[in-house]
Image (tube, rainbow, N blue to C red):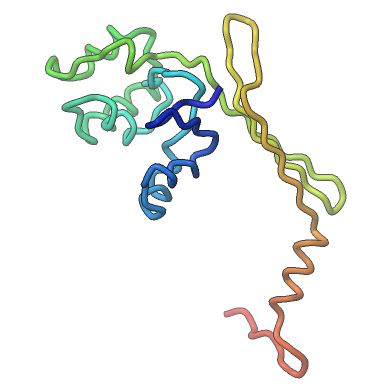
Length: 165
């Protein structure tokens, strides 16, 4: 269900873009704006950051994209016609590229129990009232691990940590 990249490779994680030649530094800058979805999906203009809006709409500058973001904060767009009233006529809004709704959602949760913590990141797909999980990642950690790491970073015998400034 992962999107196919050049040569028919299925991308499973954002890090897989490194295999396609994206430089690590570029990927680090792009990471906050990327989500791999299992099918081509329009960008939701009600939720996308200004950088994504400017990137997906030809002729859109960051200033105009920022004004869209400010406008939607007071009232989300009901349809693309409402967006068209806010952008120059030269900017074309294609249904295949942009929308004002989403079918995919990221859900993040954190559970802490004593010295352990569980974080879960899920991508789900909604069709009508039916919600289907697409991907789940669970991360466990414990304060015992964190304490061991903290202890490993303390200075050796006879040395004292520097006082906070």
